[in-house]
Length: 482
Image (cartoon, rainbow, N blue to C red; front, side):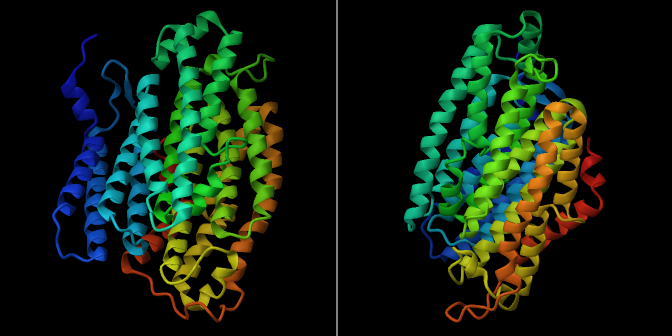
């Protein structure tokens, strides 16, 4: 097989922009100067944003090229939209980093964010098991570092350690599953795997491989019962790191999940024909995630833990979209996960802005936010109501698209979609528990009387809130890309 390296470099211009940008961020911050920590943070975030903008421009120039480098990569509409979404969520993450975060090593933090986004972008375009695993681990190792980056807080170190340990075990499960698939089909390329499985059909060993792979992806998606890392990581990680884990990581992970399960393993999906396949396993993962995420979130009193368990519930709904993609296409799932990512980054941005001036651990710490900062209170309302699925915000449209496509997919997902719709009422309760202190209760006497918002953070949050409203009113702006 002839590999055209010039073609590969041209196709990977966005990722090269990110790698070069990360190295430049480190190089500029390397000399010892008298710059203040805040100025260093602004320079690092500005250079990181410039690298992401360059990646976006390069992405538009690359376009849809089909199979690249012997089929190792595929640059289709799915990869184009997912990579663009990852870059956009990265920009929002850098926006809240510049305006809210105080870290001793801002250049290293931004550089690791860029490396993580590079891994996400490669995940979205991978069409080979080896590249998919390497891209996934590049992103995962970067996220482990980001979760434990704040050395001044024991919670951050705990988050990084737990994330690393759980992630290492899940990676071993996934790699073992990939090795079994390779042994059964003789190939690591998804099109060839699909052809071989169409000839040989399912086997007991293949079902074992599917379960192992789904265990690994269940961890990446924070789906129950592989969710145990999520509450501690969301609680302890720096707010921008938690935002990136909850948004861009999910977008890239579900894109890779889609590409592996339907084009690669679609022939052994199982489901309505009575044959055992991966659909049955995904249905049970979705059910466990919906029930555990929604009901355990009711008992939480800490803001970030509410968002963590709501993320588990959203993972269950997204798994429904994965199954329904075989019948309704990828547009509903991609719309849902991208708009969920914007709302989640915005929610963590508000939390980070509050944390800069007062503690923001418990729900009660948000009391009086409407008087301390009407801007933050208004943005938080938009983000939380979108996560709850209230019209006319984008979260409502995303849930409607995924649930309706799941209902159309058949009896395997129809009853689960109805359950997810009923559980949305439960979700509304704990989301309102976030908004109640922020919008109704008076401020606590021992907290800040006013919370000033950094201009960069204010612009980022207002843009994210406006995007949620815009995509809710005109969903065709995103759906039209498919």
